[in-house]
Length: 78
Image 1 (cartoon, rainbow, N blue to C red):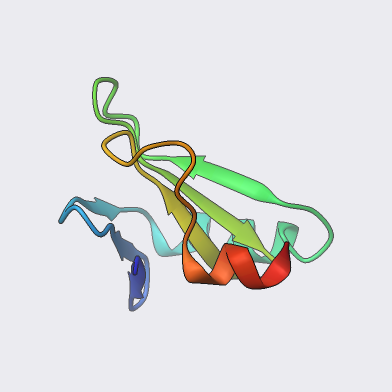
Image 2 (spheres, one colour):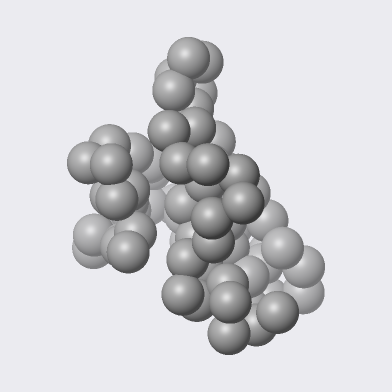
């Protein structure tokens, strides 16, 4: 399961770690209270996208993971 490392780093199931500015992550969490917001790490061939909803990180979209597979958190909300 993808997880958030305090305060602004995220680790995917595949082992990839994305690091961002703490201010950027706080701003996106605030914006995600009203709509879903995505943040890409910028590594073009293996770009991981962190998805925020409701003020928290709900998923990391990994290019190595098949598109049909969802995390346990996403299955609960569907």
